Image (tube, rainbow, N blue to C red; front, side):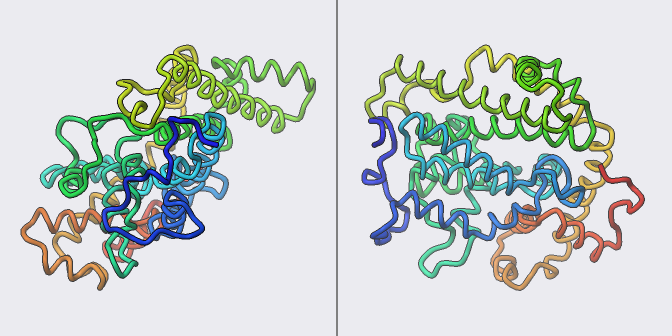
Length: 388
C-alpha cells in the first residue's frame, strides 16, 4: 500500500469540470490514459530530443524520451511507496508543450512571442491539456485531475514571480497553489526526466560519434562503471562494453535518488501529501555528490554534443524555419487549417492572433514544420548536408 505522504486518488481535489468517476480506474489512471490518447502525445513521435527527427532512426525523440522518463518514474515511485499512476501521468505529459526542433524551436518561439507574452514549454503543456485538445463533448482539454495539473505546472518547484501568460490564464480559474512545492509524485517525475536524459544523451552522442567511449570512461561515475565492466567481463565486445557501463550508470542515478529521498523523508517525516507540499524544499533529488558529478557530465555534453558544430549547423537552419513560419501565418492567417479559423475570426487584436499562430506552430512536428516551410516558402534544409 502507499506511504502516508503519497497522493491518494480517493482524496483527490477533483476536476475543474465535475465528472462521474470510472468504476474500474482511479482518477490518476484515467488521467494517464487520456494523456496517452491525446493528439499532442502522438505528435511527440516526430519531435526533436537532441537530433532532428529525420536524422536517424536510433536517436531519441520526445516520445521515446517521455516513455523512458515514465519508466524511471514508476520505478522510483514504487520504491518510495508513492502513487505510480499519478507519477506516470505527470511523466508522460511533462514534454507535451515542446515545439518542433526541441529547445532550438523553443528559443526561436520565445523570441518571436516576446511582444505577445513570450513562450514557455511548461506553460504550453498546461495550455494543451486544458484548452487545445478538443475532442470531448463536455469540455476543452483533457479535464485532468487537480493533482496531475499541479504536477505539470510545478514539477520543477514552486512557480513564483511573473507567471508565463498561458499558466496565468489558467490559474485565474483554477488555483493550483503555484507558490508551494508539488507532490512527491510530481517531484519524482522531474528527477526521472534528469535521469533519463543524462543517460540517453550519452547513448545518442556515442551513436552520432560526437565523442568516444574512451572519453566517457574518464568522466566521474562512468569511470567506475567502465572499471567494473572490465573487471567482470575482460575483453568484452566494444558495443556491449559501453552498453554495460551505461546501464550501470543508469542504475547509479536511480539508486542515488531513492536512497537520498529516503534520507530526506526520514528527516522530514511527512504524514500527508500536504506535508510534502509544505516542506519548504525539494525532497526527491540527487545527493550532493552525484549532483556535482552530473554537473561535470552535463558540461561535457554541452561542449561535445549540444554545441557540436554539426548540431549547431542544423539548429541554425531549423531556427530559420520557425522564424519564417510564424510571421508568414501572422500575415496570412487564412492559411491555417479549417479547425483553427473560428479561433482566428474571434481573435481580439494582434496578441490573440499571435497566440493562436504560436499554438499552431508549437504543435507542429519536425517533419511537418519542414514540409510546410518547403510548401509555403519554397525552401528546405540543405539536402547535401551529411546526416549525423
